[in-house]
Length: 108
Length: 205
Image 1 (cartoon, rainbow over the protein chains, first blue to last red):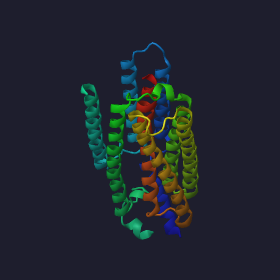
Image 2 (cartoon, chains in turn blue, purple):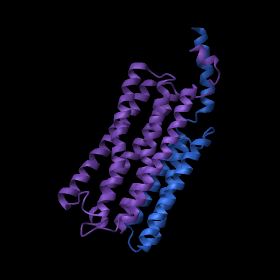
Image 3 (cartoon, rainbow over the protein chains, first blue to last red):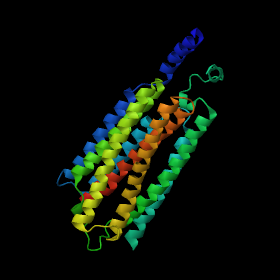
Image 4 (spheres, chains in turn yellow, green):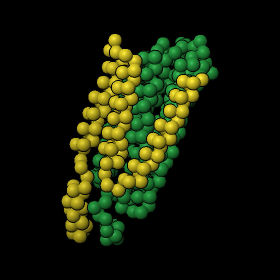
């Protein structure tokens, strides 16, 4: 019993060293909320050019996704090399597919 | 318990303490890479065909941004509550995990109800069904595929809550809960692109 209690407290110390607590996750939440509000606001402001709004929207979406991948899905933590690689390869296919669709409809 | 402890890695969190748990997480990331490709190709089809409205309504005539904003808020909050579930798991607080997962499921149900309302509204008020136009086909397949993922996530996480009550937090259940939270974050990541590309850009034209 005493042994278990000791291990528990030892665990506690090591855990507190490893787990960051909710602070970074709440910051990621706040950034996501702000970027979402800005995106919805950008389409409500009259007089902005379509090209500018589209570029802004895509950049803010990519930024929000990177924040969520890094903090909520822990890609910034150690031991995530292969996980990051799966996302990079997935993203390459997406860029290729979207670019193909865009070019196809431009020239069709 | 003392064996698992003696095995070393007491610094590692519960979900990474066994080789099986670590492999489960890596395997799930490979699955998510494939999911990126699925959604990416559906996005490509929608981006390529979104102005082919075939005498039907266009996105700017159809979409109502307030309902999309509410759906976005529900899903973003549910992603945050699944973070809180993992935080509770790292405190070895099984009850906290169950509560936060239940909140996540409730928010997801709200999202799904709004999406079903939205789709039926489009069909009944605008005749905007899946056969209407290339725009409608790619819209329903892309957004519907995401909605299906939400529905699967609701069933999956609900079953995990049941298993948590039965078996508690162990090196077996912890990786399952961690992987489900990864899945849930991924659903929100896809939604960020859906509300941006489909709804906001569709509204602008």
